[in-house]
Structure formats: structure tokens, C-alpha cells
Image 1 (cartoon, rainbow, N blue to C red):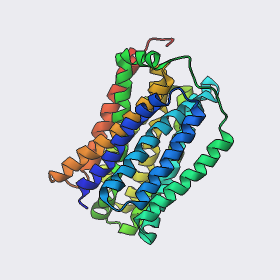
Image 2 (cartoon, rainbow, N blue to C red):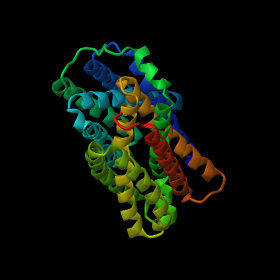
Image 3 (cartoon, one colour):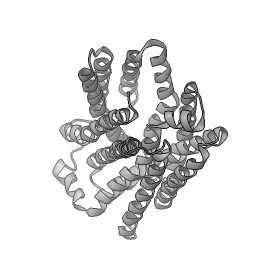
Image 4 (tube, helix red, strand yellow):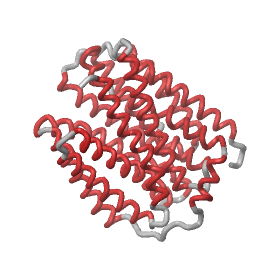
Length: 348
């Protein structure tokens, strides 16, 4: 499959999450949040089974879109649930705990799924996804407390928060600030094999390093964001921009590339908690919709970055082009975050 086509598939999945997060959040807004989470995980399990049993590309794509719809809404609601279970001064850490699942997925799920697919065929990876969903369903039923459906702010009230221009600017900062991660990760295999000189079997090991960095960066950023949200956000976005730029040189050396991608995973994950916390704070009173909308913003970044990099590759740019694009996108995210920070008055 051509690289730009592979990037398009990643973008299609991300766009499914863009639609799914706010849409399913609105449709299920009258349900208690635990019931919403259980229903979404059930939908995710079904989506994995559809993909595993698919006999054609159309059915496989349908399974992936269904999975994206459920996944997008799940992460947004889970972040709100986690933030509501802790005192206000620990909200960013609670959000970081939710997104730690994404970090662990990069450490265990991505390389594990790759290895499983190589050993037993691509369908095995989707069987594994559904099995993991069953485990999650049991854990949610056992450990997450029930609460009544939240009625203090209806959909219209939450939507009113989006009349503020800075809310949209904060969402744009999320899209630009997170875009560098998938821009690079989507095309990391040819980058490592064609530029760095690693063998194909080494690529999953480098992905593990990225995931290890994410496991370090996510909780660290959560703690720092609880202490000082704005400096943490600016620092994380600046670090993503700088690391992407440094990788342009580092990828020509195997040791430097290994260290560089470990650092890239750390700073890439570090943008997540402060970006999510910033949007939820900026759209105060619209927790459900703001959190879901920010998941959409994350996935607009997931879609847009690989699309830009794929277009650059199709135009004949070298395999390092995604790194340069990632640096530019990270810089844009930093400028947007700064604009939001400038609009916030003391005491807000």
C-alpha cells in the first residue's frame, strides 16, 4: 500500500473520532456517565468484531469508523468523569491518568498488535482489540461509581460557552499542538528504515521507546499543570516544536534517533493534559461538550498532520518532511495557546 494511502486511512479513522466525540456525547447526554461509558465500550467491542470478521474493504472501513465513533466519545467522557472524582487542584493529574491509557497503548498495544498481526495475520489484532474491550467493560462495571445523569447544564447551556472566541482558539491550539505527534508517527517506519538505516524488525522497538516516553511525559505534565497550567502548556508546546526540529538531524544517527524518539514521546504526551485542562477551563460550565469537542480537536490534528505529510511525500519531498511539518504545526499550536492565555483575565 502506498505511504500516502496509509496516511489517508489513519486520517479517516481520526475524522471518525472527530464526529463521534461530540455527536455521541450529545445523543447520550441524558444518561448517567457510567452508563454512557459502558455503552460506548460495548460499541467498541462490536466494532472490533466487525473488523476482525470483515470480508471486504468496505466492511473493514465500517468497523474502523464505528470504533472511532465509540473511542472519541469514550475518551472525552472519561476525562470528565476522572476530573469529577478528585479535588479541583488535582484535575489535570486525573485527566493525565485517563490519557495514560493512550501512552500504555503505544508501549504495549501498538507493538503488541503489530507483532500479533505479523505472527497470526491482521485479523488477530482486531480479535485482541475486542478482548481488551471486554476486560475494560468488566473493570468499568466494577470500579467506576454510578452517578445520576448531570442535569445542571443542558445542551443549550453548554453550547452557549462556545460563543466565546477564545474557546475556539483553545480548540485550535489543541489541533495544532497535538498534530506533530501523528504527523511523525504515521511515517516513522520509512523514516527509520530509509533514513536512519534500521531494519524493519527494529521499528516496533523504537515505537516502544516512544511509548515509554509517553508514559513518563503524561503524568509529569499532569502534575506540573496542576501547579501552573499556562507555563506547562507553553513549555510542552515549545518542547514538541524543538524536538521535531532536532530530530531532523538526529535521524541520521541510530543512537541519536533512539534517544530523540524517546524524548519525542515524552514531550508529545506532555501536551495532552494541559491542552485538555485549558479547554475545559476556558469553556467553564460546559464540561461534557468541551471535553468531547477537544477530543475532536485532537483528532483533527491526527487527521490534518498526516494529510499534510502525505501530500508532501507525494510531491516528492524526502522522508524527513514529516519532521519539518511537525515542527511548523507545533509552533502554530504555541502561538494559538499564547493568544488564549493573553485573553484570560486575572482571577478567571
